[in-house]
Amino acid sequence: MRVCPKCQFEEPTDSTECARCGVIFAKVRPSRPEPESRQPTNEPTHDEQQTDPWYRRAFVRVNLKTQEDVGPFEVVGRGAVLLLLLIWGVKFIATPISTAEINESFMHVVNLVFHEAGHVIFSLFGDFIGTLGGTLGQLLIPLLCCLTFVFKYGNAFGGAATLWWVGQSCLDVAPYAYDARAQDILLLGGVTGSEVPGYHDWNNILGELGWLQHDHTIGGAFYWLGTLTITVALLWAIAVLYCQLKQFRSVSKLRPF
Image (tube, rainbow, N blue to C red; front, side, top):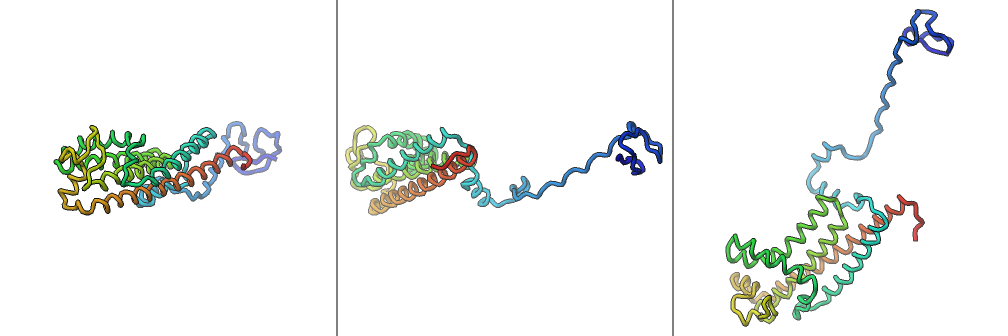
């Protein structure tokens, strides 16, 4: 049967016009179907996201459930990076700060570039800040990289890897601060602070603050801060990689191994 769109009279299917009101079916537009009601969703709207407090938005950024899609090559590559960071991190943590052996590592060369750049940049704010700027430079650059990975690119694994760098840089500073009184560490240029007065950053910093007697305490604080940061970064990277591996398995429907 066919229902007339004007008077709702039922007609045979093959009828071309309504027997009651005479309307020709071909000239009448069918009424548009009502749009389906949207199903409620638990995802926050754009307006809700804008009104969320900053700490909630920050948590969403580092939440392990908000990972970008990854393929097998990314999972394997990140696993290799994680293994390298784990081995390297344990080695750096196990290095005594009194020997400054950490200054012989490749990462010390990387940190040294930003350390010297920090002296140049922060010297604009005076001699004391310029001296402290070496340490600030080598700590702020990896921290900025970490924040960029997390908040700009939403890359939690990149954030964890660069957070590891922040911790390693703290361990790199520790022997320098620890050596403020003794000034035995070989500095850039192949000399020690005791050989060239005013050449040792942390001797100048703590000397000006009147804290030279606390050099071992401050060096130890850098060491424990670096150890804690590296530990947190490694745990974060392991958790992120685990979640991404789970996500990859569910998408590709691979058997767990």
